[in-house]
Amino acid sequence: MKIVPTIAQAQSHAKKGPRVLVPTMGALHRAHGELIRIARGQAGKNGEVVVSIFVNPLQFEPGSDYERYPRPEQEDEEFCRKLDVDLLFRPSATEMYPENRSVFVEENSLSNVLEGKSRLGHFRGVCTVVAKLFNILQPDAAVFGEKDFQQLAVVRRMVRDLNYKIDIVAVPTVREADGLACSSRNVYLNAEERKQAAVLRKALLAAKDSGKKSAKDIVGLTRTIISEAPLARIDYVDLVDADTLQTIELPGPNSLLALAVFFGKTRLIDNIVLG
Ligand code: PAF
Image (tube, rainbow, N blue to C red):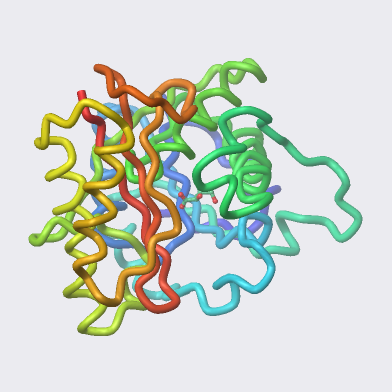
């Protein structure tokens, strides 16, 4: 595995065959392992898997967890080595963003709801860094997890609107045994918060199976179940159309139930397609 910290080195790394990118912020866990495994399958025998690790300051709101975001460099490197990653691109913040930078990439519709409403500027940061990674690494495909459903939708829109010739591959959410979605932020949870966080998946499944016929009832049921966990503090629960991400009143075959909930200082997100 080749490790490159600079943009120039990444750009001069000759492409061998189909190149598949797994963009990450590090603190790699089982779900990243699944993204890398899918990337390997997409790249095929002659292709290469590129992982980027970059904790992107632009997508963290002021006062959030940018400073304390886990950065276990050695473990991440080992993780990638074990999974046969071909190239690890691990730039610094100064390498990625010149001091007088003045160009950003902004998606202006899907970004304004759900996460975008709670985390101002978040998707501007995501789009800017993902566009830069695409430009630097020139992948043929890139792999993203469905836990960040809105991110996936925003990146797809960016790829379409800016004419990137890159396939975006979606990977179903990887979960712990009790249903909690794997996330780098789960390490922030103390034992009691971690135990109670399993309520999120329980609430989403119950809402899906309830057969309720209005968004008000579905969202209401989800909120009620989450509230059974005393440490849970709901940021939002919303039923939206999975394509437009706009709030809907009546569930249909393409409805997405999405939520963000705090346990202590840790904000967790999850979603389910009602189908
Ligand atoms: O999902 C993430 O880890 C990040 O948002 C991404 C796509 C690597 C951009 O920084």
